[in-house]
View 1: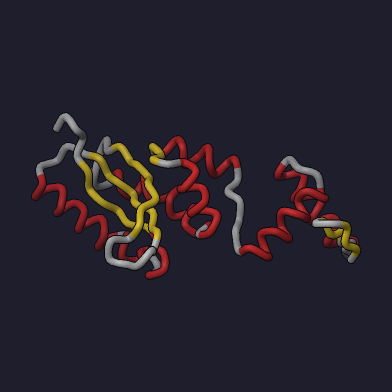
View 2: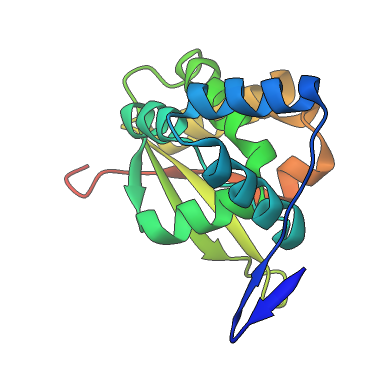
Length: 163
């Protein structure tokens, strides 16, 4: 490894098979192999995983985002939430028809400086019915998710301003 001011040069030799995998993945992501190698090294060193454009587009179709930068930053740290977020609207619609869904990164009021992602279900049901449906949703799907997911993603009920 050579060092020049604040930059370092690193040369990596890959097997033919790994080189082919890197090239195929770079092509799939629409980047060159060198850029992908740098991204993967960065991810490995920082524990962060950039959210793909396809996932961002899919999530934007399902949710209204409140603070896109904060949400993307959170999802880079907790990328394992993305499949859950992609599945959740279908599960939620079984209990809350025509609900609008919002995502927002918030600080856990019960924790100390713990960020979490709030999934707000905005609907027009009477309060007792809404709580009953939320309990059913939690019993039938939410509580089957891992504890790690449930600590980082919190579904809440919300009413529109004109209710």
